[in-house]
Image 1 (cartoon, helix red, strand yellow):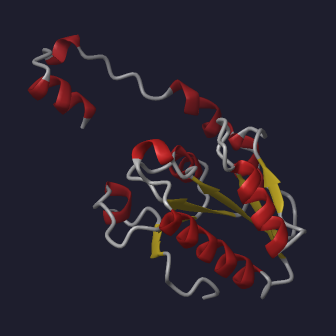
Image 2 (spheres, rainbow, N blue to C red; image 1 turned 45 degrees about the horizontal axis):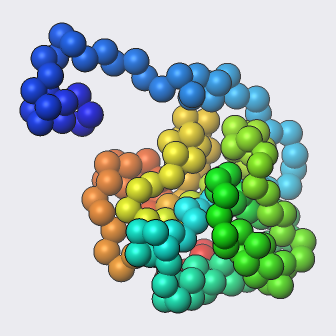
Length: 180
């Protein structure tokens, strides 16, 4: 899609376009297997961004509702750990999210600065929640590392992403039954 855009919209000749891949992800092809018997779910999500008009009370309530249901579903399984990875960038609401999660379950691990490659290697599956029309790179990274991915949208109507159409991930709405 990027190449087609450059050719058709920017009038760049195809011979001038180099396809290089993503050097950032070269390490992902050299992953190490997990050795724990306990199952670990890594939960990632975009920060709620007021700058783009998505930081209203309704969005926080949707996220809170989803987190509450996720923790309740997790608590039905004694052999399941939940690690929440906050976005590495500075965000005014990280403290709020940490506090909210600790109220739900003080045993939940909340991490911000651990490298995502280490966390994906340690987990058995990834749950990524999007409140923003831009899927997280953790989806791609988890697919590269052959980890099952559950993609959850807080939107009523999701965009028709290729990874959803190709069933590369399990796509759920925020209101689906999380325990099952």
